[in-house]
Amino acid sequence: MTKDYYDELEIREPAERERDLLAALPRQIMQAQTAASAFAKILDGVKPADITSREALAKLPVTRKSELLALQQERRASDPFGGFSAIRFGPRMTRVFASPGTIYEPEGEARDYWRTARALYAAGFRGGELVHNCFSYHMTPAGSIMESGARALGCTVFAGGTGQTEQQVDAIADLRPAGYAGTPSFLKIIIEKAAEKKVPLPSLTKALVSGEAFPPSLRDWIAGRGVTGVQCYATADLGLIAYETSAREGLVLDEGVIVEIVRPGTGDPVPEGEVGEIVVTTLNPDYPLIRFGTGDLSAVLPGQCPTGRTNARIKGWLGRADQTTKVRGMFVHPGQVAEIARRFPEVRRARLVVEGEMADDRMTLRLECPTAAEGLAERIGEAIRDVTKLRGTVELVAPGSLPNDGKVIEDARSYK
Image (tube, rainbow, N blue to C red; front, side, top):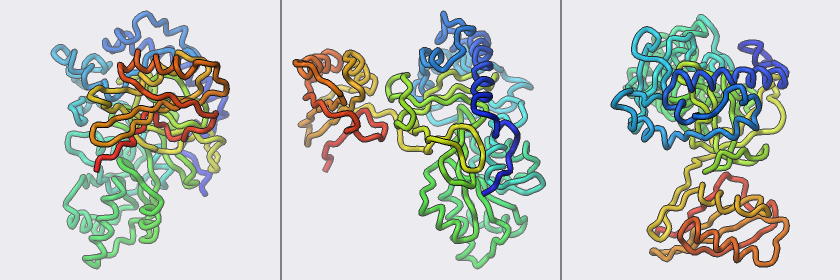
């Protein structure tokens, strides 16, 4: 287990890191308000000087990935980025990318703009090595996200991209890269194709993977073929959010972001260890996203990484937070479940379970309540009808009874 770090930021005292992040927060909010017109509207009336704590940050609105496309489209006639980018076409914006939807994202001129050098270093890559990069270079930023970090680390990059497996195998055999960057499933395909062609790839000993799940079974399969793989969590909007280390105990948060875990459908932070949606405030001045809801679920792990890195860790990707479902022809959102729960101080956690077959939908709202006054269930039932316009059964359960999986709405219907 390495105790070799990319920089001193990784081993700061947690209190020092928190102080530095919170000191940077008002400046970033000011940047968002003055340089990104969309956030001037979203954060209208917010005084940056007042946002100096996590409690103050948690009162700001969450802008979710699921909403970003519509928000961009509203303003696209005057700005292709919908007012979210603080930079414009020209030397400060080196590239433009598109995510599904289509959401457009800028790439600024900063060295290691996406901050992935840190993750590559933790994966064992060092300056002077060749990285075989199989992330896509077509429209999406994935290829550039990894390439810019590798180049900042002092590596040379082979732009392999996706597909053309036989040519990938030949290039690895000829160029002898130190490692691979790309999705774990494509790495498996390359290894299998090399075995089929009886082409040894002895130089390929490490990998940084992302873009999809990396289960222990696949990690062990790849390791059995001589490649040590670790994963990182990054998005096209935010760049690096967290990265795995040799300890393989969760993902350490990046040093350039402020991460919150909130109850799905709300902006309310959950207690440490509880599963919720990952909400990120980036300190990138070129694309200053404030409380950006990724739509991904995770949870904070207790303690610090055994490698000595002192930043908080998350469990990794645990599913999607957008659990909107249609019940009896009407959409029910996690935010509506949260609104019902907020009306009753006795409620600790809530979970709406939808059951039934062949359009016979039944809703049961299960709520953790340490105490329940007489008539509470009936009053909650009335709130269900008021908020969702649907009828539902109320079930009061003991604290700790509901699963800690981040689900606010559980669709348990049979679709056979």
